[in-house]
Amino acid sequence: MDRRIERSRQMIMQAFIGLLEEQDFEKITIQGIADRANVNRGTVYLHFTDKYDLLEQSVETYLMMLVDSCLQEERVATELSRELLIRAFTYLKEHASIYRVLMTNKGSPTFRHRMTQFIKGNITVVVNYMNLETGIHRDVMAQFLSISVTGLIEWWIVESMPYTPEEMVEQMTKILEARLQLW
Amino acid sequence: MDRRIERSRQMIMQAFIGLLEEQDFEKITIQGIADRANVNRGTVYLHFTDKYDLLEQSVETYLMMLVDSCLQEERVATELSRELLIRAFTYLKEHASIYRVLMTNKGSPTFRHRMTQFIKGNITVVVNYMNLETGIHRDVMAQFLSISVTGLIEWWIVESMPYTPEEMVEQMTKILEARLQLW
DNA sequence: CTGCTTTTGTTGAGAAATGAACAACGAAAG
DNA sequence: CTTTCGTTGTTCATTTCTCAACAAAAGCAG
View (cartoon, rainbow over the protein chains, first blue to last red):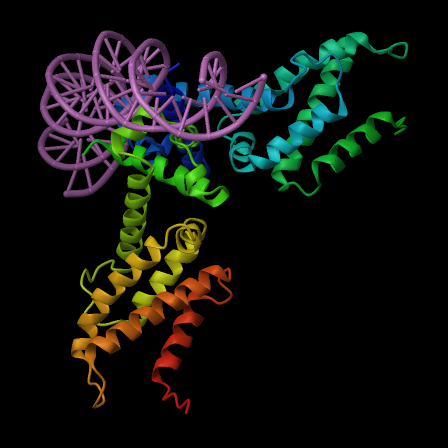
């Protein structure tokens, strides 16, 4: 397919995220986005109907890029492997500037929400293969795991990644393998 | 003017310099440049006749960008001001990856040569306003100064900029103001 | 409220970039 | 030597992007 399309979309979304880092979503203008992307204003309308569509598509695109980065060869995650998680953390670290904006932007909780949704979809498959102790419902387990992973990732990014991807995954497995007796 | 032109030229030249950093000039292919620039191979031919033209134009363009960066408002340098030199060093530092390649690439001494030429052109004006001690010819003085500046800049870049721009300019003025008695 | 400016979304003509195809050439491999 | 193989430089029809102009809506100062 014509590489101008992908390039224009990329430049526009990048510029948009960049502006989102500096100013409030409502303050951002199409003209400003076009200027920063070094693209004609009309080109923005060629790919996105308006600001809100641009936000939505950006969220979706960057979520998919994150997913693709850790589902390299397997294509289907039948198990929540350590390597997969490490790849995810590593990718996030490499593109921290973008994902920090998407994660922390209070104006739109869309990205974190969509991310949780997606992780839950995948984790549900894994949970269905698990041997659960009696009394634990699979849907509760899936919800618990996905919200935990998302939450840990968000914390890690907000805190400017205080641990390496490996350490984070190590921590997560340790926590999950431990029998937490809080009461 | 159509911003696609400038953008394409930029992307191609950037990709070219990037490749020049990794491999020998003769080993570089138009296809490789196009790939790295994320541009159709035909587009390269739309702007440059061949590899050699691309090298020439890159040298000229990046030299002019360096010049523009330090001739911000004055437009004409009637005096070799400290500020002008600091701006030059600072700009070089900011775009070190590009200018290191252009400066050190043994295959083509073109950039350093053109740079010396240009500096000499400007310094000649300055020298004509100087009060010279008897016996010093203005053309010799101009040649001496321009080759000194270029040489110092080259050394500074090759050595990975061991001093700040301010320190370098300070050093230069000290050297020039000193009465060197070597024999 | 009333101008005044900025931003928006849309249009059309024209320019630039695209992919695909081509013949020609040199280099490497059999 | 002949046969691949990759690169080159060029062409062409098609698509995308650009610029400029426009009317309408939104934002804002007096």
